[in-house]
Length: 293
Image 1 (cartoon, rainbow, N blue to C red):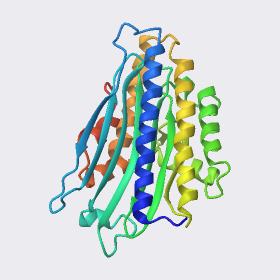
Image 2 (image 1 turned 60 degrees about the vertical axis):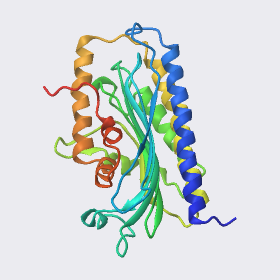
Image 3 (image 1 turned 90 degrees about the vertical axis):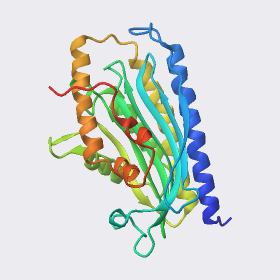
Image 4 (image 1 turned 135 degrees about the horizontal axis):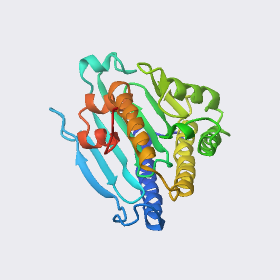
């Protein structure tokens, strides 16, 4: 059945909200089950904070829900959803498809970044979104960032399983090219000023509009589903591994790379700041403690 644009917007945003709550439940369950170093800390629980976007001349410019948690396993994790609309600033509109004659936009999505207490547990990022200008498309992906040099390689069990999950998300979808999206992720999450990757990769895709909304949406849903299936497993198998002060220091230095990428290159951060998004939500991707040697 043919869907109107408003129907496409509605089902996309509802999915992002549903996925947010599924992830929140899974991460809170990890917190409840943890026993190990730091288990004297309070058990983490997400604080969900609604917010409204403001733009002059627009009565309702949308908003979202920021969900943050700090606990025994997750030192800081944000799982945010938003649904915003308005007009791009003139200079920024030139960088966005479909704004040649009209800077108006609508965008909804989910964005997640987790930083862990235990250096043996990799940091992770996942984002999926639906953007509408005079055109419309899906984008997103997920990537893993081990913070210990000894674990930051393609032969590590976490790397193997995370890549397998992202490949499985693409499998069965004719519109999803895993090899292309994997390379796109490697190229995107790269720090040129340091000549090094941010982590071990994953998948990244953007401007996905095959002409079949249902196919594109089904794939985007699978990215979220397979992420939800694999990452809690990776956390659980690593979270009770003891760590040393030396490993903690290595973790803090590696987090500096994360900060550098997000502030210098990340399109999502730039998009949020340029479109008047929630500053606390946008910058929640920053780790709580970081070190530059």
